[in-house]
Image (cartoon, rainbow, N blue to C red; front, side):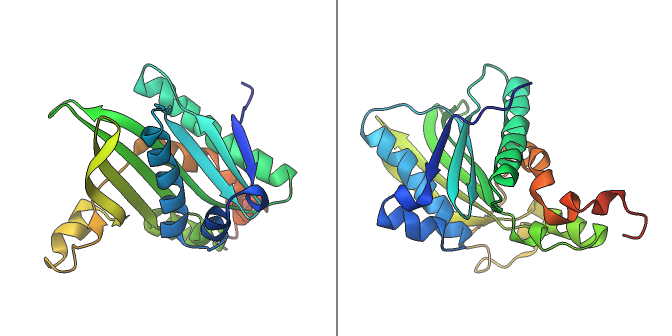
Length: 213
């Protein structure tokens, strides 16, 4: 299957705000820039498709995951990760962040939401053993942005760059410590991470095939 990236933007060509966000090394700032772009499209009356994105030290890449079924979207998301990894390798760039953004309806209350998830790959890129790679998979920073919409306008912000944690971890936290954290998860982000695993230096160097790690 051909791996297609729908859009690529050089960070150097973006606005000063976007340049600063995408070169900041901050998961929050990268996600905030992507999410604000999503909201701006909605304000302009455009209904964007679901997208996966990858951010390198030089570029922002976008792949559509617009499909009818979750199974089809999962395949597209994994292929997006493969495309991000292949493109960053070809251009001798470091894939630093991956994520997804979309607009959808929650059928339980018929409300419409815009959301963005972003994952920092720095811990995975720093892994030098199977054990540290496994730890990085479990503990990599993922942040979530979620706004409730009415007529394409934000009426409530439910998550503003909240740190994603497991439900068990969340339940152990005090009420005060739960502020700024969420148990939100996105399966397509996980698929993109799996697809992009070949961008990780330890994997590129054959670490997973070595009996010494």
